[in-house]
Image 1 (cartoon, one colour):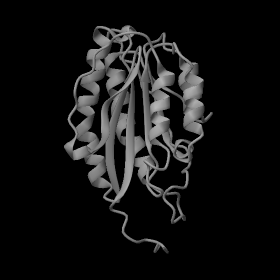
Image 2 (tube, one colour; image 1 turned 180 degrees about the horizontal axis):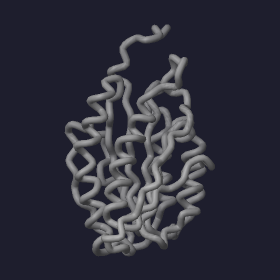
Image 3 (tube, one colour; image 1 turned 135 degrees about the vertical axis):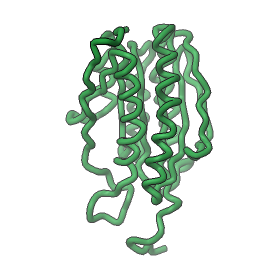
Length: 229
């Protein structure tokens, strides 16, 4: 079938997948702040979706600790999405989580035509499994290569080299979240700016799956009044 440039795009989905570190290193204040930050970001995500009617924003969540599991397995329209708090346990099986994502970025289950998916990784630790194998699995899928990727490093001891490799773009940097306020700001940015980047086709192209130019994550200022983890 021939597509008409400029034709209706209301049903083009943007799949947004959170990858959340829920290992034991997230015990205490970190996990509480993570739950709070995502919960507070949902209204802003709805606002961005309403401002981009060509995009249907669908949310999912994967948590990873000793195992990776779906926290929200089925894509949920942002207007219907409600956050369910996560709890920490176990080690940091990031590779298993990336393998789960890779399975969802194949076609099917992804449609042949959609807007770029968003993969947002939030972690404070060092992976304890073969995370590079999971990353290669994502890179082996067309949608994985096109995805808008965001990485948020929680705490000054987070392994930023892992997050940098996940981004797969030397022009991008992980967002540093060394305090509760920085984490809240990073979650807000990831959940809005990345969706905007995914929702906009490349200028002059009628194909919304064409990879856009890199977006520019902000440098989040630390707040000296906050306790640093």
